[in-house]
Structure formats: C-alpha cells, structure tokens
Length: 253
Image (cartoon, rainbow, N blue to C red; front, side):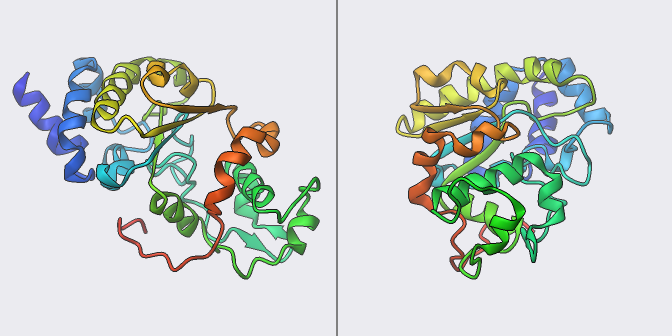
C-alpha cells in the first residue's frame, strides 16, 4: 500500500504546488485504492492524469476561496483541470459581443454575463448587442487572463468530482467525495477563515459547510445564475473583469 501511494504521489500530484502535497496524499489515502489504480492505467477519462491536480498549482498559503464546480468539461479540448476554465476559449470578446467560443461554453458565458452585471456594464439586457456596446478597453481579453485574475484573488478553482467519463458523472462524484471530505477538513484546520463557493448540485452536497463559511448557488449553466443577488454581491468588489497587469505566477498557459 505504501508503494501504491508513493506512485500516487509521483503520478497524481506532480503538478501541485509542494504546499499541497501532504494534504493531497492524506486525501488520496481516503479514496478507494482500486479506483485510483484504474485511473492510473486508463486513458479514457478527462482531464487526464497530467492535468488531474492542475488546480493545485496555486500555493495553499495564497488561497482565500475554494470555488467548487461539478465535474470537468466533457470535451478533451476544453478540460484542463481548472473548474469553469474552458481551455478551448481564447478571446472573450468579438465585435458582436461575446466571442463564438464563449457563446458555445454555457457556464463560462453566464459567468461573464454575471460579472458584467456585477460591475454595472449590463443591467437587464444580456444580449449580444448589449454586450457589444460595453466599453471593454479596461477588461481582460482572454479566458487565460480571466482565470489568472481569479487565482490572483486567491481562488482555488476545483471541481467536486475531478474526473469525467461519459454517463458516469454521479459515479465519479461518489468516488471523489471521501477525498473532498478529507481535503476540506484539513484545509479548515489549516485556515478556518477560508470561504467555500459552491456552484451546482454535486458541489452543494459537500458537507463541510459546517466547518467553513459558504456561498451556495446554482451552477452557472443555469440562466438564473446571472442575476443571483448573493452571487453578484459576493463578486462585485473583486471586479474580476478588470484588466490589471497580470503576472502569470502559475505557468498557466
């Protein structure tokens, strides 16, 4: 068993910042060993072994929020190990509003519309025409810069289930629940002021809301997410669309 988890350390968490290693090894030890063994030998799941723990490239000591989505994108060209970041999206904008790539990524599209509403660029019209009229000179231009801004604000962009295979989302969610329980308990002990941000039905089943303060909301693929007042109030002070000079600390591209 020790050698098995030695392999896990080497193969599963080599992308993670060293500050996470002890936490991740402990959380992995709570999981079903045969399930982990299958992940090591199978190539059919997303986002794939090299990206499984990519979200943990951000140092633990810099984390203020743990943003939990549901599961990885179901497309190999989109899943990259970070919640809500579709790696197939380059530019966020076009002359007609949002770019074609953003419009195809429902969750990301609604997330951006919510952020535009939070900063006052939109009011009650979320059409392409309304977005085209927004002055975006001061906005981030690419998905990479947007999610770098999230991480610069201290977000861990994590999915409640780290693995996707077609038709097996609930199964993988069950397999990762012990990992999440152990990880969040350890994080709560490390820094009980961290805040959970739970989006979607899988994430909202995470029981550690009793240990850490939490914002719970519908998944961004729901159109109601755009105007969720609690979500808007939470994100408004951060102005994540503002184009600051982003220093890419975490080798994201």
